[in-house]
Length: 629
Image (tube, rainbow, N blue to C red; front, side, top):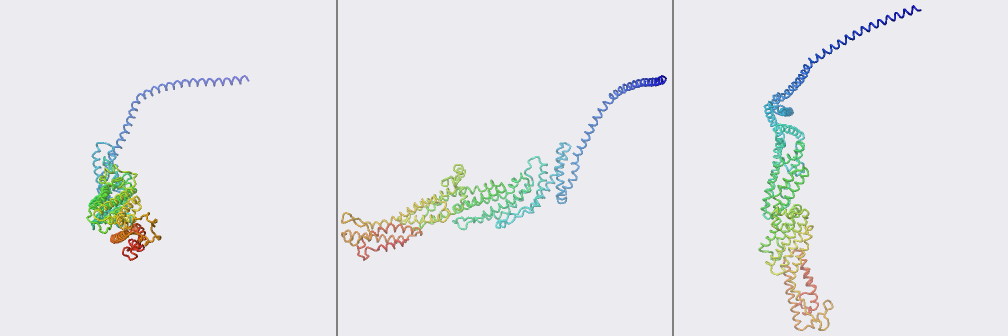
């Protein structure tokens, strides 16, 4: 057992010694490795110190190389537009017809882009290329302008406006296909012009061409209607009053409206939204100039025939004002230029109101004769016909009268628009009421002048009264039979005053026969006398008269008969309007018949029924008076 233990210990001891030996070797190796690491570290530091500058230079070289590559790329990009000039020049020189419109436009777009890139590079070396591309782009744009113009001219032949006006058809617009093509051309032309020009490019060549071609189309289409306005304005009878609607201005305005609306519909799909108003105004300007010229010529015509053709001025104001409002509502444009075109006629219309008043006064004042039978003056019919005509133009007249102000038509301010407008304009004024005041003033002026003329040329108040009554009757009748009835309610009192004055003048002559029917009765002689009627005994009354009183009664009968017969004859000789005759007959009957009845009841037995003094019994007198109506 002991031997075995010793053997085991010896074996383990040997293994320990081997392990110690290995450890010694390992320590030696570790020292060698540590020495190698120290030497390697020293060598690494030496290498780093040697390679560090080289690595830094390499990075700089890489950055420089990258920059050079970028510069080369930029040069290539800069040179590319210049290099492609030859290809684009061939297409542009060939023109849109040979190259095809789409390819031509695409070439222009590439040229425009190339020009923009060159300008953006801002290199002096590119200035020559920029100039060449600019010249090329101008040539291409000019050819595109020609195409734009040709497409427009295909539909620019004047049309017959009456065909569309009379049938209430819309005027023709550009076909949708052409409008689309024009829109494309306009967009590319606008871009090209913007690239070529440094100035404001809102007024592009396409807009100018469109305004020129379409403006000429509108003007030529309306030329005949413009001439028709002057032809229909010519007078065949010097003193004929203008009748509403006989001039061609209404048709002219309708044609312009239709063409302008159609043109607005053309412009909207072709041009950009911000260009609509400008292009539309430019397109319509030529036609508006012709329209304004026509209105000036019509204004000169109205001035030369103001008292008869002032109604044409009112009609023009109404038509043109409505035209401007409708166009503004549909297009938002043209209100100002249209309003400016009608200003001269508006001033003429203002002055006409004062002129008509003066004409009313002068026509009567210069009369050298009036109807000898008391008939109404023709000037009254003319004056009322004017007022009736005026009711057809209440809208423009209301506007004019409001601008003149109350009474402005009677002063010199009626012909001075600036002063009148600034001093008298009242936006709250009632134009219809002002017209009523104006018409009333004219009517009263007419009656005053006729009254003065009647007193001068007619002998006797009866004839003068008949003369005024006839004129009043015509005035009243023409008011009642027209729209004046709704406007001149305030004039009724004035007219009635003149009617009563005329009646009193006429009845003044009947005071003589009525005076013959008055007698003196003494209440202290016998009983109280009867006032008349069935209770009076004529024989008893006559019997109680003294010889002198009987002679006096006989003389009264004779004087009455003479005066009555004379007035009856005169009454029948007068020219009276139907209503005047009836009215005056009633007034005479009311005045004479009661007096005669009373006088007859008392004194008809003076000639005992022989008819020597008492010519009419009561029924005969009543019939005679009734026959006056």
